[in-house]
Length: 381
Image (cartoon, rainbow, N blue to C red; front, top):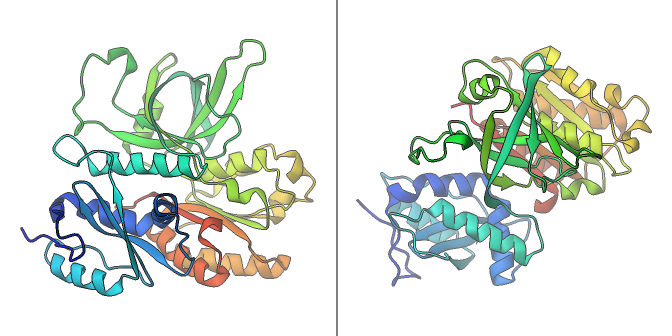
C-alpha cells in the first residue's frame, strides 16, 4: 500500500494509511481546539483564530501538526500522494508532537492522543479526560419526558456536583459483578452519557445522580438503559469534562437537541452569569420540550422575566427540514427581536448539522476559538 512520506521528517516511518485514516479525518474535522491546545502546550505558541491546526501525518512515535489557512481535504486510501502534496502546499508552520509510547499492535493512536490531551490540559491548567473505571449503582428508572429516560444512580464520592455536561463513557455490555468474564475489545459496546445532575445527601454523604438517555427506536443505548433494574451495577471507563467555562461571562447562545439537552438543562440550573443565555432547543417530538420547561432555573435566571417563554426557542425537527438553516434563521430572528449580539457559543448536534452550523456561525459572529464550542454528539449514519 502507498504511504505518505514527509519531506521534513525523512527519518520517520509514517503509519500505514489504513491504520490512521479514520483517526486523522475525525480529529481534523472535529477537534481543532484540541490540536491548537497541543501547539500552545508543547511549543508555547499561540495559534491565531484565523488559522487551522490539522494533523498532517501520524508516525509510530508522534503527530506532525501544521497550521494552515484552509482545511485539508480528507485523507484518501486511493490517493495518499495527493493529500501529501496538498498538505505540504498548505502548511504555514509545522510541529512534531511526540507520543509517550510507540504505536504498535498493543498501543493505539487513540490511547496516545488521549494521553497528549491529559498532559496538555495539565500544562495549561485545564480540565482533562480521565482514563479510570468508575462504578454506579442503579436505583430507579423512569421517563423525564416522553422520550427521555432517566436513570437514578448512586455515584462515586468524587463525582462533580456542579459541572454541567460532565460525561462518562459507559460500557453497555459489561456487568461489574462479572468482571472475571473478559469481553474482547472488539465486542465492547461503549457510549458517552452526560451526568444530567448530581447531588450529595446531607445526612449519609452519599452522592446520587441522573443519567438521561434519549429513546429513539431500537438502539443499543436506549435498550441498555431501559433494561437496567434496581441494584444493577454499571461501569464507566472514562470521564469527559465538557467545555463550558467560557460561558461564565458575556451574552451566550446555547444550541441543543435531545442528546445535548441534559447539558443545557444542567447549565440553566447552575447558571451564574448575570446575563441570561439564549437557548435554541431542537426536538423530534414537540412534547419533549417539557424536559426544559419543567426544570428549576438558577437563582440568577429566575430574575429574568419570562425566561422560558422569551429566551428558549423550540424547533420541532422533521426529515424534510434543513435543520442548520432553520436554526440559523431562528437565531437571526431572536437577535433582532431582543436586540442582542452573541459573545459566547456552546452547542452540540448531529455531525452534519454541527459542522454546517459551525462554519456559518463562525462567519456570522467572528468569535475566537475558545469562545465558540460547537460539538458533534452523534452521527445519523
